Length: 577
Image 1 (tube, rainbow, N blue to C red):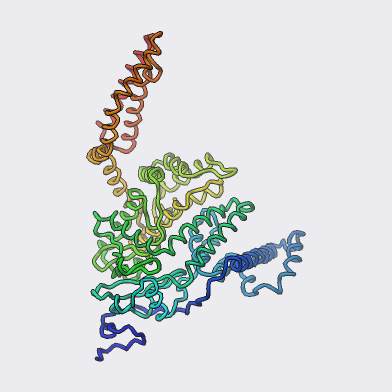
Image 2: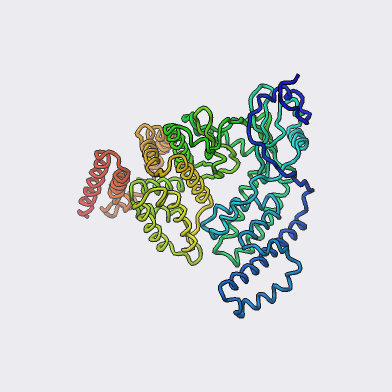
């Protein structure tokens, strides 16, 4: 049958008849992946060490050149450095060492392979640790990584799923949808006619990642001795944790299902459905969500109402991920955020997620709420509380610098003058100056925030993300302190209360013995004596918190009145002794 489309050169059987339905999209060109047998750890160690030494020598050449341009090329230090570097010149790659150091850094990472390319992509987010010139250059790392051939792609699927591709898929597009440093993705259709995307790890990458992360942790420990300010061991440890999770696609499947469960009440925010029967450790089959990348030029032609809705959905989703769920997309960039054809917003590429514990999530929430309310001092205090001081750190100086930065932002809260993303990023970057350290998840959260803000400004120029997000933050606050929710949460404590009541005779007997031991004095035990003061103080603090969050006045006045009354009565009673 000739339906007007060219025949594929592949051997997938049924799908040739359906190629007219294949989505029209630009065909990217890719280099072929060089599939090598994974090297042992010793050989990989020396290969990595060689590249790191070459990078160090290249830094020397770059420094020498920079000093020469500044007119300091004849200082004794530079002359000695040039003398030493002269012995290395015959062994160096002249095309690389002639480049500025940030370019050398990027090129060396590319030469070291997929694991280090991924490392560079993560380091490009760490503007709080690395100079901006380096992070900007690292953003240019390979965007279209080499791919395995289509026949090899099918072999990898069959090897992991233990089934022929013809039994599972009606059609597979031979041209990849995309290719990263660790995996590549092809569009396909199941026998049941659902359109899916198949993500497959490239051969050898798991072994390579395991070896490289071991070596990176070793190098990180060594560099920590000499470059502690840049936290090399923390960076390599974070990278190792994320990389090991990314080479097990079952974890990405779990992440997608967790996100879908978290957003069950928001059908306009979608995540790809996972087909577990066609997925495993190295193969992930998931729903293909039809739409356009959020930075696609055609999105700008949408109506103002539609663009406003998209921005509002994106901001609402990020706020819920970070402040409500504490489970957020940690590799968010415009290509992973889709405007779907049905008006929804879709998130894809969920292999890297960030997680906050309840304490960190609460402090982040208070930080953003303080910014929304224009409270520069409390915002700085909450941000400082999320950090820890390194050796020689100055937390007080950091807090004052952040507070000044907050005031500057609150005077000009717009994307052109000083955006919210810029504020948070600049605040975190100050940490390096004052030797303050943050959890890696904070930086990933900032990246998500900056991405959404940048996309929002593309669609709605001059948008103030804080104004848009303010209503979502307040809605979340009201939900958290809703009496019905508090009552529901309290029900969870009923079993413990009942257990306490069952054991109350024992507690009463112990209290009786304690009181009998103090029969020689009329004065009550210290704990009993101050119990009223403690309870009254708790009521006063509760009232202050409710007032700070702008809850109804009668609620916090009640707590204030109760607290002061109990504490006053307790103090008056104690005055008799």
